[in-house]
View (cartoon, protein in one colour):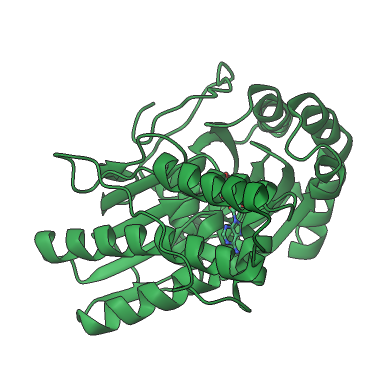
Length: 345
Ligand code: KG4
Ligand code: ZN
């Protein structure tokens, strides 16, 4: 009996280093976050207007041991209580990923614990499980981050059907580029979000990109060009650019494209639950618009707290738990895969 109880509790130490956050977390049974430590490099990369891969790798190396130590301390446990080591192995910056993967392999080997490589986007989706114990597959998930824009049907834990994807820029990338164009700096998303609060979303009409023949795919390059043209024209004619209005109107155009497709997919597949994930899922306008659209359509809406939307290791520990339960284990040959596809191994 005691043995069974022990088996029922699975405590995972998770590591995430795919971009510019060095993160470690301890997660129990996929839903209980015992600690979630994030060391952000944003201040360093801000100087360069974006993430510099070489610097990111070096900073991960400097921070990773300390971040893991802190995560264990905050969780009140030692290595002895850890059942498995999980790590993001793709997609992301190869040098950055390698730091986490090498660390996880070294720990798994030295401690003789199972090792699990996790897909970064699978982690973002799993972030929804932390605060929503009632959320279970199947559900629709809109994944919107700096590198990805995917409309996904989550059929089961770790089982995905990608129904729509961006044909060009990711939603977060569009936010970052527009922010740079209006001089708000890096990282753009939160700055556009903040500026837009003072603006009128109906002030400027920007296009909502459609992909002919693919109703669930996204395109943001036309919208981005339209914003850049607007800025250039204003600069040439000396017209005033109201940054708040521009941000609010751009944000509305992105959000309209995201919300309409997500709701349409729920309706077409008869899915009653919709979740959002990834850094852009922390956008206040998107959260509100999606919540309203879900309420109007009788769909339950789930979203992680903002801290669990942007990169963190708790989400990796959540996703890893379901893979662990399925019996999946990785060997010491696990490698970083910078362009890893969702649902592929
Ligand atoms: O998921 P994430 O932390 O990293 C990736 O996996 O890419 O997402 C980062 C992206 C960046 O493009 C950032 O500008 C965007 O998420 N982002 C936001 C907000 N917070 C972060 N975009 C819009 N509104 C926000 N509040
Ligand atoms: Zn991410």
